[in-house]
Amino acid sequence: MPRDGQPGSALGKSLAVLETVVERPGPATLGTLALRLGIPKQTVHRIVRQLAQEGLIERTVSGDGYVAGRRLKQLGERTLFQCLQAAPVRAILQRLVDDLEETCNIGVLDGAEVIYVERVECDWPLRMQLQPGSRVPAYCTGIGKMLLASLDARTRRRLVENVSLQSFTERTITETDRLLDHLKQTRRQGFALNDQENTVGMMGLAVPIAGDSDTIVAGLAVHAPVARLSPDAALQKLSKLRSAAEEIGHAIRIDEGGTNP
Image (cartoon, rainbow, N blue to C red; front, side, top):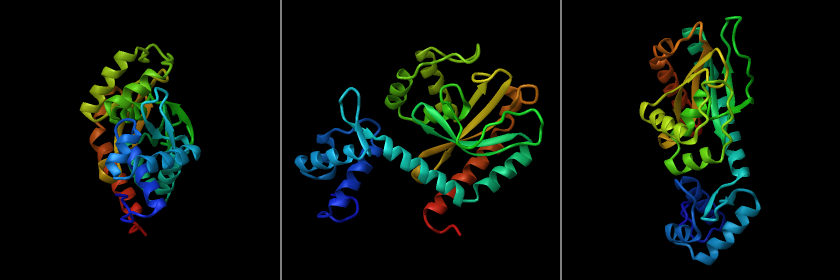
């Protein structure tokens, strides 16, 4: 039954198909959608065709089902951007920067890239300049590795196997199996270190930000030159980073619920 409680609503059925496609860990087949939603397969086929035409879902390259399309991903990113702007996220980020005395930023995953959506710079003259909207590879950045690690194993492998693992420094992980093992470890430990994997001389530490239903929606990172931030020094900031991430996630959830002023 469509999740809006209106069995006869064409819009409700379309939304139910979209939600099911997005929530499944792997591609959703027509048969799975029909069985899960209690909608005739012929009706599901028509809805899927229309959604695909609008770019909201797309068939996988292997043809084994449907996943979120480019347009739906863009809508999701814009929605998250809006939530981050409406909630007191920048104020939380500013307090964290004042406390850690290093630059902190928030990023979201877009395919094989990370998009920085919010950032507060520290006062040190030596720092990396990246503006909100900047894109960086996910596989060799702290936020990117953290968000890749948060994906289900099948999706994670599919993404990694379809990325050209370019070497940016001698520490960049460029072997697929080694990167997948590293991401498994990252998932277990709940944080990601970026020890000069993207830029020589730069260290980063990232933790996840959870939205509704504890789904990981973004990552929070602190980074600085290795002269100021060694791996051990970065890990000493883990507790404060996690507390800020929890506060940001709470602010996003409140705002999405409509109770945030």
